[in-house]
Length: 164
Image (cartoon, rainbow, N blue to C red):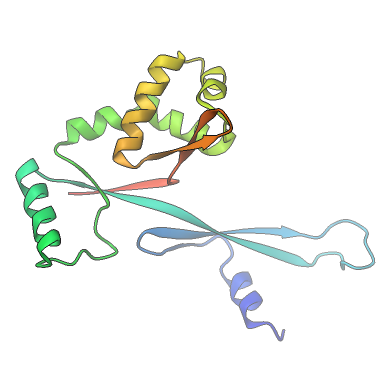
């Protein structure tokens, strides 16, 4: 094979490669149809970069000290540092409850065009959903994008890594 990148992709079958703030997932397919341009049994690979959001837990005082040190130039955040901070496991558990993680999964897989469409998909009331999405947006878990005359929720990650 002349193409070394394709050889590398083929060698990575069923592997997940961690990349600090994201990971690569390999998906493969084999040509099985009868097409004179595509030989039977040829393997095709697709690599998807999946976003990981790192979440830190620290006291309000420690978070404030960190922000001030960054603002003063005394501390340079590393790419591997958490981007979202919570003051307790309890507050994290409220925002990333089982119900809210399921909601994020619906947003990620269904890609609803609006909060109203998301309400229809989930059976949740639109007012309750709007409050939940506003909280998730404040923490950076969801991005609210203006789409025509409505707001479209977009999940910002596929996975979450909690760092204490």
